[in-house]
Image (cartoon, rainbow, N blue to C red):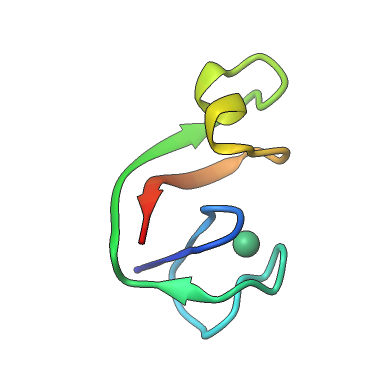
Length: 59
Ligand SMILES: [Zn+2]
């Protein structure tokens, strides 16, 4: 699995992020499942604006 360098979305396959069209990276660590992005501290920290599964760190 890869993670988007821009929005941190975790993507199962493909070359670009389906959400923001950003580049994907295999170099990521940890993930969080955001189910309510408006109330999640993690979502705020990594700049997530939609619910989904996101990597905590992407290089
Ligand atoms: Zn993205």
